[in-house]
Structure formats: C-alpha cells, structure tokens
Length: 505
Image (cartoon, rainbow, N blue to C red; front, top):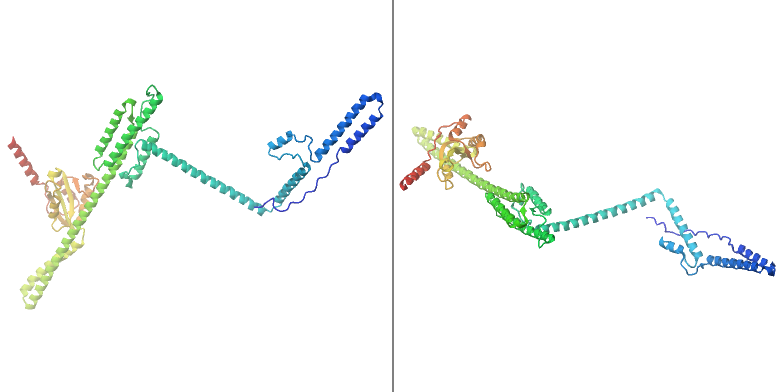
C-alpha cells in the first residue's frame, strides 16, 4: 500500500513579507508633533489632543511589533479564538513563535498538496491494487464481524436453552430414555410430540388456574402461591407420565392410559383451591408419548415372534430335508441290494429269479428317482387343512404345508400344549407344488385372516367346505376331503362336564 507521506517533501517557498504600516504611523506621529510645535500658547487644549493622538499611534505601533515578532498584545490571557480552536480539535495558536507556527502550517499544507498530487499521478494498476487491498480488508472485517455475531447468537441460544431446561426440570419434565427413540419409524413422531410438550411448558399452557387469587390479602403473594403450587402439582403429573412410559408393556396400553388419567384427576382434586387443571391438549400429548412407547414395544414383540417362527420354520425345513435325504439313502441302498442279487442270479442262470428281481429293481429305482426329485424340489410337500373346534370355535381353519415324510407328525406337533385339544384334519394331500397351492389358498382367503399383523399365523375365518370349493375352483386334484370335524376330545369333554353337572345337581 502506498504511503503518501513517505519520501522527502519539497521545501516550500518562503512567504513574502508584506509591507508593514509602521512607516505610515510614524509619519502621522511626526506630523502631529510638528503641529503641536507651531501652535501658540493659547491653543494648549488643542495641543493636548494632538499629544494624545501621538501617544495612541505609538502604542499601536508597539502592538503591531509585538504581534509580528511572537508576543501577543494580550500577553498571557486566553483569547476567544484559542477556545474555539481547542473545541474543534485544532491546535491553539502559540503564545510565542507565531511566525514559526505559520511556517509549519504552510509546510504541512504543502506536504498534503504534494501527496494529493502524487496520488493523482498514480497509474491505474496501482490504484486497482490499492482498491483491491481496501476491499479485501473490508471483506475480512465484515467476515470477522459476522463470525463474532454468530458466536454471540450461539452463546445467547445456549443461555436460553439452559434456562428453558431449568424451567422444564422445575416442573418435572426430563429428556429421559424413551423406548421409541431407537425406532426408525417412530423416532420422528416422538421428537415432534416432545417438541410440543416443551412448547406447552415454555408458554405456560400445560395447566389452567384461577386468576386474581389472593393470599393474606395480597394479590402478589397469591400469584406466587398459585405459581408454586402449579409447579409442584405439574411436577407430580409429569413424574407419573414418565413412569407410565417406562413401565408400559406390549399389550397393556389401556392400563397405562387409565393410570395417567387417574393421575390427572388426582391433580385436579389437589388443586381445587386454585382451580388447577391439566389441559386436555397437554394430557393428550403425554398420552401420545405413552402410545408411542407401547407401539414400539409391540413391534419388538412381533419382531421377536417372527424371528422365532422363522427359526422354527428353518428347523422344520431342515428336518424335512434330512428325512428326504434319509429316504433317498434308503432307496439307494435298496437299489444296490437288488442290483447285487440280479447279478448273482444272472451268474447262476436262474432266469425266473432274474425276471422277478428285475421287476423289484425297477420299482426300487423308480422310488429312488422320486426321492431324489423330492429332495431337490423344495416346493414339494403335503398341504393340510385342519381345525380345532375346542380352541378356536366353528368357522376357523388353519391352512399350511409341510415337507415331512410323515405329515401327521407335524399336525400332532401343532396340537401340543399351546392348545387344549388336538387338531382335526379335513384335507392332507401331497403335491409337487405344495408351496404354490398354499400360497394360492392364503391369497384367496387373505381378507379373512385372523391375525393381520403376523402373516405367519395361518388361521382364517373360513369353513372346511369353503376351502374345498377353492381347491376345486383352482383344479387341485383331491382324493379325500372331510368336511365335518370329529372333535372327539372336545365333544367328550363337554359330555363329561354335563355329566358332572347332573351328578352335582
């Protein structure tokens, strides 16, 4: 950046001395003295006047001399001009050395004129560089100012947040660990609900109270009493709401709601003196917080249930595969046996035995091929339609499939300790595409599913005859189908119960 004051400055020309009025005043004084000498004695008073004029002229000459050569006429007194120059920031006129001061002022003015002329002679490139530096300096200053303002705003926001958190803690609301925070689906909804709760607390709209309450005849003390009691009761309500969230379980949302509603009623009873009520809007927000926790826990329970059923299905598939592999090994062993016997009979020339064993070998090879095909074909299996009149009542069936070699084992497993009675079988048939038939039936009765959440639960509101009609409609070959459910255990239990009632009567 150019320095306008750098470099030697040209020596200004000395100011020209103006002709002073000393000679003129001396001429006037001499003329007056000459007139005094010519006047007669009778003109004494006129002579005095002329002498006074001479004295005044001499004093004026002395004043001009002192002013010109560094001594003010007023000596050490402060003039009005000096006071004015001091107020505007200009240096005061020195009491001595007026001529030297005037020369310094003149040289300073000449230096400034030289700097201005030198700036005017700068080339455009130097001016552009100077302007660019000035612009960059201004931009940096603005950036630093913006950064400082942003830091100040952040600090002010932190201070505000701390105050709001302190107010929330005062009424018992804390950012505790909510079960729904880890839910991808519910996290945003939970954040929105919590933001509304905090807004209600911040705007003091979580509760309503009476106005104009007095305590000891003082409205001011009455207002303080209302604020303190409101904070205390609201703190108790928020603590109960948080406890409801932490203790809610999958399936008992109704109990948690009833508990929170009861807490609201108790708060209203305790705050009757000041007409305190938890607002419906705030109560609904806290209920939503409990609902989100229950929904997340229910989703976790369903997920665990699905995982358990998937593991059970995998075990079932593996078990069925092992059974098919064992059957294939058995059929392979049988084929090898008949092959060895056939070779021995051929060696001995027993033609009748050869023909008989040849037929047995072909039958064993056919069974082996079928076993290998079914072992490789994971869609092959048995489709079953079963019901449990004692457990689910009339009009509910279970439609599924199994790859077990003995499908009745699977039916008996379904009727274990989880249900009170054994299942009745309406249809049980083998198919190369058992998976396709099962899927078709599930889609056909999709609007009649009992459990719309867990689709692995294969129960439907349908009668055995309706399932048979669906199979016939889709041209599924059926050898045997039983519509009536024997329900032997259920019917026997009812008969025994009636007999016992008659006996007791």
